[in-house]
Length: 148
Ligand code: FES
Image (cartoon, rainbow, N blue to C red; front, side, top):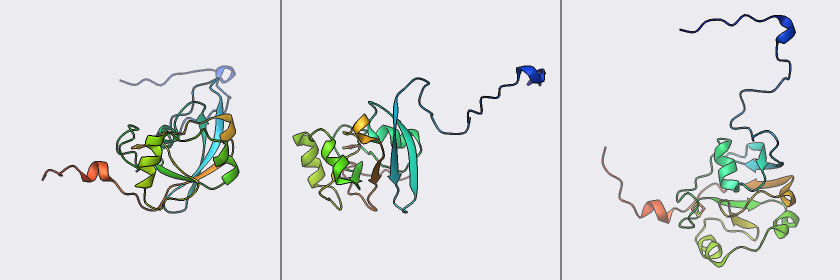
């Protein structure tokens, strides 16, 4: 049974920390601000902990980026398009396997990357990444759905 906790006004927490943001980074974790533009064109600016992939950051913040193979480079559903070429150029070069998967991505651009392969870093501060309106999912499409 829940009991109300009585407290004096002197001990009330006044830090103002919000409790309803999804998965805020742990205290002390360095973050950079990244804006995701979803399929409907809605912008979501989030604090991305350094070292986390942009796919993980999207999922931590309930942003609709697919990631069908969970980062094992077997799909291209985590395709992201960097809006700023300057920031895109600061990213480490993509691995050959990433390039192969990107070739299969729907709506490939010159600033496309796979979200599971790009880690948040200081260079990404202020980056804006667009989630394409469609994705091509060979990974899941290869599976036969079971009838319910
Ligand atoms: S989640 Fe499948 S390649 Fe990124």
